[in-house]
Image: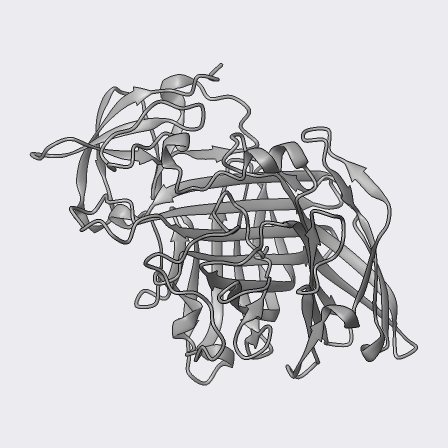
Amino acid sequence: MKNRSALALWLAIPLFGASEGPYRVALPGFHYEFPRDHFNHPEFQTEWWYYTGNLHTPEGRRFGFELTFFRQGVDRDTPSSGVWDVHDIWMAHLALSDIDGGRFLHAERLNRSGGGIAGGDFAQANIWNGNWQVRFELNPQAPGGVASQQLQAIADQFSFQLSLQSKKPPVIHGEHGVSQKSEGRGRASHYVSFTRLLTNGTLTLEGKQFVVDGSSWMDHEFFTNQLDTNQTGWDWFSLQFDDGSDLMLFRLRRSDGSIDPYSAGTYVDSIGRTTHLPAASVLLVPGQTWTSPDTGGRYPIEWMIRVPSLGLQASLRTRLVQQELTGRTPAVPAYWEGAVESSGTKNSKPVKGVGYVEMVGYSTQRQVQASRSLMDLPALGFDLDRRASKTKPFAQLVDQEPLGGKMHVLGLIGERDESRRTHRGLGHVINLDIAVKVQHLDKAIQLPGGHALRSRLVGVPNHAE
């Protein structure tokens, strides 16, 4: 669910009390087809793909990473009028935890899919947002029909190219094909994970390249409704133990401070066999907290986990307390997502592990601000006629005029990087699949698929320095 996140990665998307409208809801009995179901499901309103991992160099320097792609359906009723119609919004998050260096860097993107800027296509075996992408090498004989997954992402201060190979078949969480998150028809998701991905590749940080290997975890969820209005946040855990087993847990928190009975988890043994874990079978106890200087959120950075049926007792901690992702606008919520280590016993034998924890809903002020739906596009600078836009303190807005055609607005296409603290007018980078530095007021831009556009800068952020 992580994806996290799960549960609704609030990601400014209407996960609370959303109506079905033209979308399907997640119901028991869904028939999964792999590798097809690793890709886009536009018949559901919300979808995400979450990659997290713990890596290390041959010398032992430790890193964590996150690369996530989100799709939010915003229009299925309006007839298509061109490639730039806004049917879906695509967001992506990228983060690097330099654990031994004591640094946390992150970036984000928001795009539409028009012109091939973002998508998740089975025919191309690719999920992407600009030049952040995952390429699948498909093989019907491999676990889940996937021989490997190639991750690539580039930000101002860091980049990585990683190859992931699964040692286990994909895991379907929940029961009867759905992961139920609250009471009621369709308040659930279809939730699939690769829980043990052997990982190797290169990572570049501020110009220095590191050879790395380790293990990663991939979550994929699609749904239309999930959470109830009295569910205010969640805690999600992915753990990979040194005995070859894996554990996913999520804990849903209610407005009265109680834990929702729809909290659950999945245990995966060393050869991929799964056991569903209902809420009553798991004890999760938060420990020491860290208070964010940016949002005021108080996040537990130590946890104790007990699963009596597995004979498991483990303690979790992180070596890097600042792993909070904060967007620059109310449309992007703050949440903590970071690398952790575990130690404990399983059936009275010592067991250690690594993993990731996601905690949502601890920064109350920011979460309230972020509760707006991405369907409320005017709040983000869009007019819903999909033909106009306004300058907003979020990203640069650019008019797009097909050469020889009538002008219309591409809309909010900016890319922001937390490492870049200022935006400087015409020097701001705009993401159009490739980064284009706008140096002139009138500039031709060539997009994938042969779409030739002429770009005219119409506004800069009002927080530019």
